[in-house]
Length: 247
Image (tube, rainbow, N blue to C red; front, side):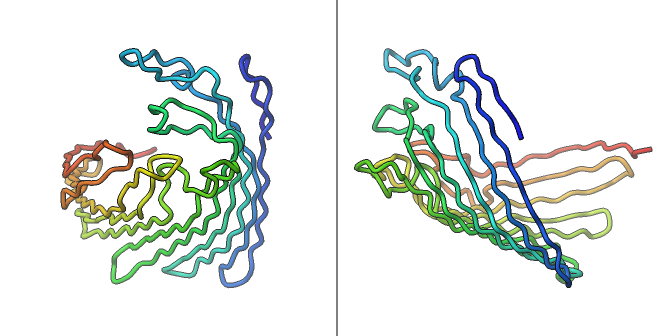
């Protein structure tokens, strides 16, 4: 349980409760319910106008939400899986919309239904971890946009991580995919779905030293998660990491 006091937005109590039961064969059932409070940021309220155009809204209200989740998971030897169904209802959701010059405003009600799946295993020395999310992020405010998708929330996402070590060397990769979404409340600005591939390798050349290299967006795919803002293309990084032994 938690109680927030804001001199601007007053007192707000939030909390969460969870329950779990372990069956035989590594099977576990869980359920949870919680609430949350999110106040507007300083920029949401007071960011100065951009070339005379408003960039903030001092009338933005705080978000409140309630979430429930039911899940089942199993851990057996070299593999595990999990499946979780959830629902979140949000009041006064803070959103940005190009139709309003991206000035923050409140969406009176929104709801998100979702199903998340996970699967992990060790296969021929490879560590495999996969995720799949199917959700319905919908406007629920009974306006002209009722039933439309919430901005910048794809209905489907998936991810697969694959890693393996060969003595002092390690290699791996991450494949990520997202379905299409919309940048605006009216669902007029469509953001296309996309996939990316990231590669990584490491070399531990001394007990406390490791050299790491990574390549993000390996195929230099062009995509947007916000309208008119391209995400970075192919990028690489080289990292020297020192991690002393713990005593």
